[in-house]
Length: 223
Ligand code: PMT
Image (cartoon, rainbow, N blue to C red):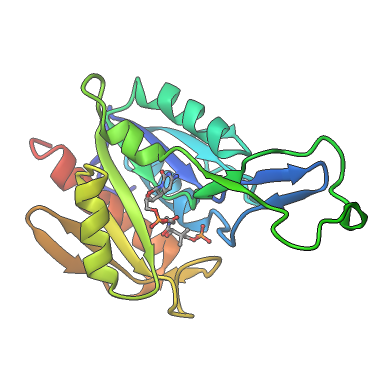
């Protein structure tokens, strides 16, 4: 059994993509498989935490000892996250949230015969889940975000750390075929006010154990 670095702590984790309907048969989403977030949920549970895993549409089994809440849209993920965060000491956002959703969800299938040649989609910005939790005055857990970047990885991640008022951010270069979306492996840099530490590339399951250790050390320094 690994060290119980999260014994007695309540942890909420978002994982996987969100999905935004365009019409009854189509949606906007991304390639997140949920593997990274599920691995962190499993590692946090092994480290003694009471874990709520807020999962977008993914094909993964629920890790042992973890309470899972399934959601589809960003709004659903936001409400589940707000509810779980009320009772959490730690909030980890590993989900790949769809940043924009269709301004109008069509009741019926959108037809190309209706004169829809281009500009069929008007998008509006989705709420930022992790920034909403991190912006709380009250019932604010320790908040860890992820940053999926394709260039200037560290610089962009530091920007998100500050802009979203996070306590820590885990930066991954998702242009690297060895890591990021849908891979079993990942390579990340953990960044907070005190500095940055690049971890060696590893299986997401192994990386999750190390991330949980580093997060616990920062979030709950007394032990
Ligand atoms: O799921 P896998 O296939 O295992 O892939 C793992 C991963 C690459 C998805 C994961 O490691 C990762 O990087 N997750 C964050 C993906 C992302 O969308 O990053 P971002 O840089 O766009 O967002 C920054 C942070 O804000 C993230 O913590 C994200 O969860 C959060 N966010 C973003 C937008 C939004 N509307 N609400 C949010 O909470």
